Length: 274
Image 1 (tube, rainbow, N blue to C red):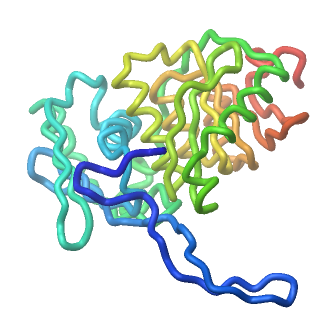
Image 2: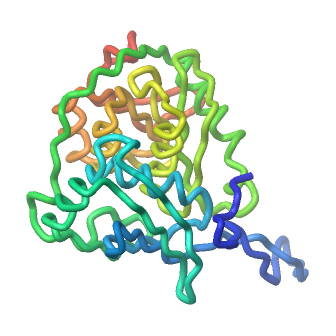
């Protein structure tokens, strides 16, 4: 199961409920997902506040920093400390001075809500970034993709216990899934996965990302920024996500089910699909 943050928050809470089913009612204890304000502070300056599951926050901080273009490589993050505050959790990052200067110039201050990717963006130019084309070389067939979906579902421990979290998973070319991250927010789950992959020195060109949510523009943007060649989602993409995937060379698949899927862009990584 995903571990709580160093600040001591657990990702699940036990609450008393009364359950009604088939005309009968009983009292029991249920597990529900925690949702905590998480402030990301760079070199002492608050930059973003997101509502997130309080687990794997080191991965979240690194993944967010890379996928948002704040850092260009993991080595530019010098230190990451998780601090419990009265109102939530503060993640204090120490980053390279040249990156911090660029961050201050952007003057971006987010106040995020669950599932919101662009809250607080100050301009249209900031809202729509255009990563360079990806070079992902991994190729998958339909059976491989569907094996990956099944493997991801088996590893969603928080979802199995509370039914309220999204997941992002890393699928190898053979369909195996060796890394899953979960969060109440779909963008957060993806950032946690990207951070964990970056920490492990993963070959971003050699696999694909699976997500349990819709494929929004920002999900494609984050995937392309890290140079990953394929994003496969359980739900639908948006038109803007499709246009960005086409532009950046990302293979975008949606409506992934045990025996079906839809490919929207760059079907060469899913040969036989149209």
